[in-house]
Length: 460
Ligand SMILES: NC(=O)c1ccc[n+]([C@@H]2O[C@H](COP(=O)([O-])OP(=O)(O)OC[C@H]3O[C@@H](n4cnc5c(N)ncnc54)[C@H](O)[C@@H]3O)[C@@H](O)[C@H]2O)c1
Image 1 (cartoon, rainbow, N blue to C red):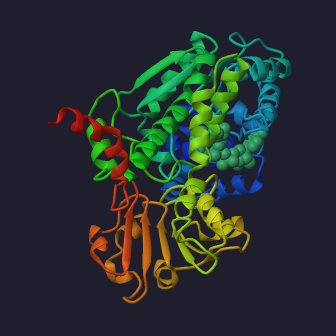
Image 2 (cartoon, protein in one colour):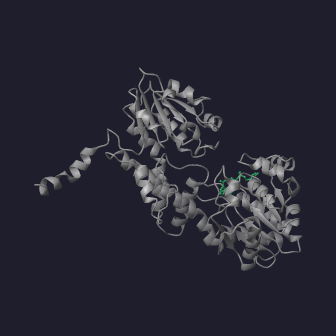
Image 3 (cartoon, rainbow, N blue to C red):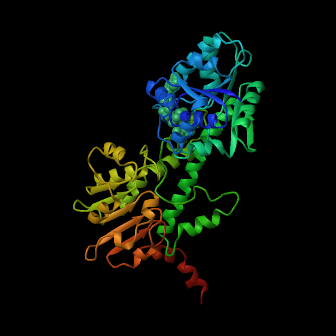
């Protein structure tokens, strides 16, 4: 049995604390927020995350929380630090919260005789751990890193909504180590937490810091590539982005994941990690063009879509945006492409209705009352002239033809994820636009102009 402490009982930290306790280890969590500490000590989840509440309840004997960093360090052998590292106005990540946590850990280490390993899990940029945070530990502990205590940087590759599952079933474990002893200690702990064989990659702190943001930045490029394919397919007679993605996804150099053309990426990690990689590139004198283009293409999607719909969006048109969170089954609207689209429709003068099974309240606040957020998808459909399926939520997959407006009223349905029944296109009062498929308005003339001459020239 290991004794682990976790500093920061937020979306990632609380889930990790419960998951580690569920593997039979003793876990003590620390938070500066008393409500989070009380919640854990009362067997309640301090944040909303799938499976967290039952996991905390089931592991109460091995999991407790405190506001004292000293107590937590004294009662554990290894500490994960998972505090916020918000983006600053340069696009880098602020170390403000981590610095405070490291100061408190440093003070606690001063009183401790056994070696202790401090593991930073928060997302930071290359150099931040060694140059920004280790000196704080050394100063306040009066000890030298690698001698008096160990240091690692070890981020997690998890998605909100599946944090516990992702943490316990990683594709690989990434360990940046100050020294070999620190890396060995963390690897040994991980091997007792993750109950199946898993690849471990140990490297310098800086390479691990870069690898973390590189994963998310790479995925954003891949999503944006798929979205570009979708835009091309939409303009091509017979074009079908799903057919193209399914085929190229079979190439092992590419793979199928994150290759579904749709409305773009958002959320608390993808956009900011991509921007942060541009920051690092520029700081080191390397071109940031790739990341900058990905970000710009993603952010300009809403404007491009509204501009393409110019003909049908006007002041007396009601648009229903179905799905407002940054992804299905989430209450998070941070950097949500659906919210960006709703704002673009509002700016174009349309009346906007919105619906999301979980994110309605957050969306209402964000849109400042400019859109009407309704409690049911069918209420939205009753009033809408234009319906936009902005997230591939399971609830929207169950919609049938009869849910859309009655005959006599024309409705345009733009399905960004192609999840509605194809039969919608056969209904006379519905114009069904599965985004990323070339329909009647796809411009065959362009292809004719490009290649028709060849046939004329060589055909006879
Ligand atoms: N949420 C994700 O999907 C995700 C995924 C990968 C990486 N990360 C990274 O993990 C880090 C934490 O993210 P999160 O989403 O869990 O944040 P969060 O805001 O949900 O939680 C952070 C917690 O840390 C506490 N805290 C702040 N300073 C503290 C201190 N000095 N001592 C003790 N507690 C302190 C806060 O009160 C809060 O409860 C960030 O760097 C984030 O980029 C998050």
